[in-house]
Length: 481
Image (cartoon, rainbow, N blue to C red):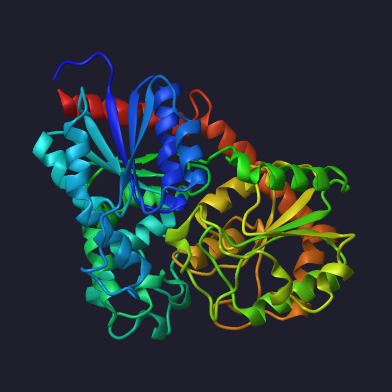
């Protein structure tokens, strides 16, 4: 197959957590490596925020096509878990993806899809082109994910009831309580979907991971060199491409006022004095937890910015597919302790629904980030040199929290999982004070600054991720001939 410029199609499932890294990787391939990239963004809503995100990165070599997600209301019940929804949605959208690719003047030479896009491998096989998966999480999660079908045969009973950590060859073990959401209940239909998804990922011709060599040397070595894991992944090459982050936060006209207000407020605060609190685009917490968190922030007497969204009855990922939409939270007063806004108006800023996260984390006045530990937010915090309070809610976030606290040592976390027990105000206050004023906070700051430097080095010319992407491109070209 002769071609002058390699053309890569990247398929992103709904949700900013998958779309943003696929789009950013496409942008890097187009600008840094002079490839032609087309991002096929499957979306459930055409929101102004997502539209701006898609159009803002469009360049000569990068184009973006939005594909409306298939209607799955007649296929699965409305209360199906998010993993099931995404997998079925992407499966049902394959015809639309195929049709879109067929209309391209010059078809792609390779496909890259996220872990929910494995049904699209069929399109690559029809076209006779290689297909790759981009794991938007880290290498440790990747190891558990691909090894799950083996654990399924080894472990008796529920994973969460096991007395010993789950062993993954060559990797740090996973505590039973830290398993990803689909593994919480083996009797739920989502567990079967998850196992099928894991097998689908191993059928790719290579695995790209949003991480870098110095961040996860043990897990990456295991994926490449451990005999057991290599057999599970079918000896496919593993490429590090991270850190892949947005680097900016598109705001649009409707959000520019919020952004200006937030940055103006931050400009008035002392250096490293503010805690930023946000649970991502999909995370929600209970009313009770929201009140304890509020009281803890007040009790700490530290400055804060808090992105407040409508609380749920319980910890939830229910707003995940509503990314970019307003949560309907016109004012948070009804969910916060009486008088809280008045008492904290001199040290705190409460922002409904959305805030410019990248710009906030990059601001010199920010000392820490109370985060749900989504991998995108985690990388944004690391690459801004901001230590964290780990507050995992769903998906693989408990593993991320363990990695941040026990391995990288750039975060503190509550004694009990927030998904299991409400974190009290005194504990919230202590974590905030320790991070902003304590010696532990200073130590974490030094360590996260070293990781930031390591990440920047990885993506710079001749850095480990730069070289890895070059190797991916070389392998891709060889498969295309």
